[in-house]
Image 1 (cartoon, rainbow, N blue to C red):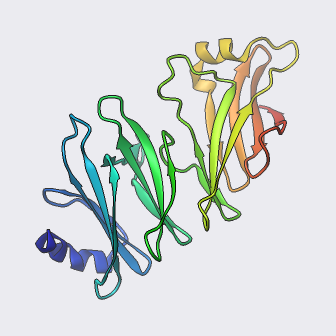
Image 2 (cartoon, helix red, strand yellow; image 1 turned 120 degrees about the vertical axis):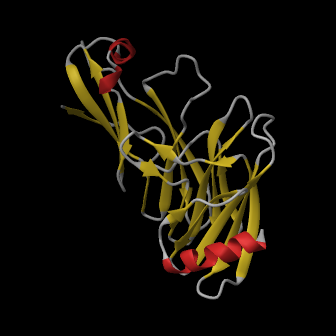
Length: 231
């Protein structure tokens, strides 16, 4: 293990990219004055896979801390771009990892860079959507639901300093005399979109009156009414 990391050291100290490694190495990379290595052990089939995160000081390579989570590092792709399964935001290292064995889901764990303290452990959220105002935003993927309620959006935001979680269960209102949102979204899923910026969360839908976007302030409270924007 130490030999593999030693071979990676020149790359880690001089690069901000991501590198594949030998047996057990999931990925490694540099972020600011730190570099991090991820190693995996255990069985994927039986749900016993473990992901070890090791943070080193850059330069010099001094070991700062080591932590372990269940599963494998999750590196997603939308067909055009590849998204790494980790990143550093402010003073936090977040990790997206698949867990659960046969019925797997994508969780996200945040660690404080200074001491490796676990700040959050969010289940079934995938990658963060965005950050802003000292907070980070996730959306529950509802992957275990056969027929998810499309008017419902479940978000969770975490404070980047304390890790404190706030859950937002938001509802997209039906427009007057425009039919059932779910009916049209199921029939034409291409219009169904979700995205966010540093202040707002957006949910695009289609109904009998056409395409519209519901805009929520994701730093606000759960009972808020969205701004409806026709497209």
